[in-house]
Length: 221
Image 1 (cartoon, rainbow, N blue to C red):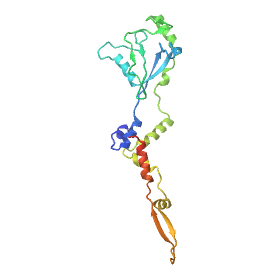
Image 2 (image 1 turned 135 degrees about the vertical axis):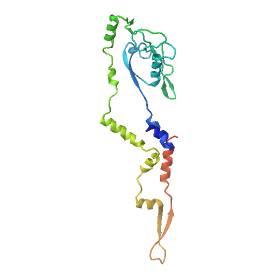
Image 3 (image 1 turned 60 degrees about the horizontal axis):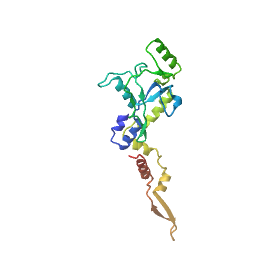
Image 4 (image 1 turned 180 degrees about the horizontal axis):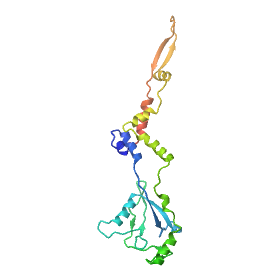
């Protein structure tokens, strides 16, 4: 559907294709080590939602081009992540975010965990009250969600017909209204005439053209 609209010869279809762009999101349990703006969150475990840019930084650590791979989620030999959010073009930007260079074990109550049974027990006790990551797993759509999505997609089902769809939204005027829009008639009695003479003053109906121009201008192409 997206590529049909994107590759269409219609400029309107190309514009509408922007509403069908794909966006992937990912979730992970993270420990907040330091947050100067929200000190009360430090030491807590939260679910972090992130997009492809941060996912690419994780993949780069797992499969680096030159260095040794690092399992960043390893509680004993992982790496802390420095999350830096800036604004670029009015949207959040994560280009300055990065993993620290050295590997470190996670800390609980200020103490680094060890790789023995005591350390593993401490980790399990620490994360037992953490948010349930399974709540963010993929789930099949409900009938209500499917009907809603299909209703939206039906607007994009016929590439090249977007303009027709818009112009069809306005019902055709009735014959009486068409006659009134096409001409205004003034009847004037003429002396000696059995019936009044009709004088037509024509005025073109430009509402359809104006509606179309307003529609195109509103697309900000």
